[in-house]
Every structure is written in structure tokens, then in C-alpha cells.
Length: 291
Image 1: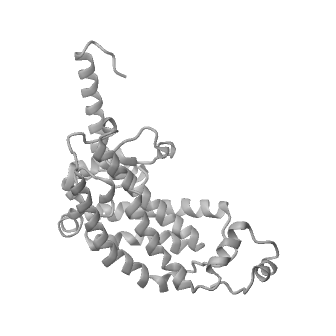
Image 2: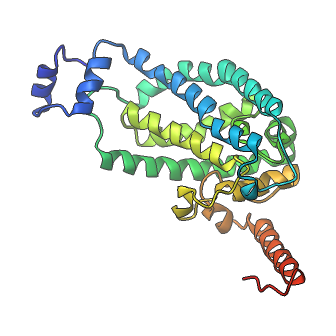
Image 3: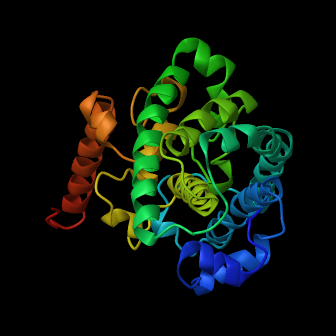
């Protein structure tokens, strides 16, 4: 709840006029409790989980972009994808939504605010960079642990039921995995707390990124290809393709941890062999030189 009854008093307290966006935020949230505002997180995640993967459903169903599909021999029907979505929604209602509600005291404790002023673009970008780096590093080690015998058999194997991932399979996992992987996601905001809008943007971008890496398609126009050390769909798809025995490509976002700790060797050998195979096939079809 914003502790100012009017926009004018909020402006006086800040020592400047409110921006247009701050005025909109004031008019919407001024009389609402902080808990009510925070509960918007549940609606936000529901919309991301439901809508962000939907274009990929259309792509898979129509076959319009099959030339960019990574595992071309695997094809999912609408019923297959809807079945996955239903399971994800069950987990969302039972685990994700509940977790957001019970975690509210921790949100208060670390100091994520919902009042005025709103954060500047510089502040938002700086905090998002910190959040992505912290999440990526901690997720890497938790993911490696989940590929030990106990972690995989008891928890992580469910996520690997999709050896050729699809967008809706991004949050498809054991309830315990959802809880455990919530730690890296929350750790960044806990270390560098900011505004609730930055928090919302962070969890939205992180989930959209996970959906993109589980898309099963390597689109050449993806803007993420311009991000240094970004893994992407093809990189993570190899991890699912290898399956339970995979000891490669554990990174959630970036590739530097896999490179530093040597867990991308299998992937690099696979890429080299694939490149060689494509080159040989091209030469057999007419002496075409492949670079």
C-alpha cells in the first residue's frame, strides 16, 4: 500500500512530478495491500505458462517451420501437447501458486517493495543481469546434482520424460524439483532486492527463456542468438536428447559454466561429428563443398 492519499502528496514526498507510469501505478495500487499486489505474481505466472508456449503449439501442429525443428523425427499431436499442459497446470495450482502465497513473508523480509518511486531503466537492467548470473550459476550445480543416481531416479527423471522437449514441458517436472529450482530463481532478488515490477519482469523473462530453450526449434531469427554465451534451444535440446545418462549441458541460460567445468565436451564432440556427417552427405550428392 502506498502511504500517500493523493498523487499530489506523492509528488511532494518525492520532490518531483510523478511520471505517467508512476501515476498509473499509484491509481491502481495505492489502496491495495502489499499482499494483494504480490499475489499478482500468481496470475502473471499463469499467463506466462499458458500463453508463451502457445505459438510453439501452432508451429508444431502446422509443421510450418519443420526445417528449424531440432529432432525432426519426433512429432507431437495436439492431444500430446494438451496433456502436457494439463499436468503443468496441476503442478501450478498445487505447487507454484501455493509457493507464491507462503513465500510472501520472505518477500517482505528481504525488502522487495511495491511503492514509489518506480525503478529506473538502469536499475532494472542492472538487477536483471545480477539475477540471471546468480540463477545460472546456482542452477548449474543443482542441475548437476539432479543427474546423480539418487537425484535423477527420485526427482529429475520426470522432467526427462520428454527426450525431445516442447515449450509446455519447460515446467513439467517433479514437485520437488520445482521447489528446489525455486531457490536459484529467488536467490538473486534476495541478494539484490528491488521493486516488485523488477521481480515480475525477472520471473517472466526467466520462464520465457526456459520455454524458448525447451521449444524444440532452433529459429535463426531468435534475438537470443545475439546474447554472449547464451545456450539456447539447440544447446539444451542435446541434454534432453541424451537423457538420463547426460553429463553435459547443465547450464540453464549461459554456457560458461559448462565450458569452465568441462561438462560440454560430449556436446562439442556431437557437433563436430554432425558437422562432418553433413559435409560428407553434401559431397556425396554432387561434390558440393560444405563449410
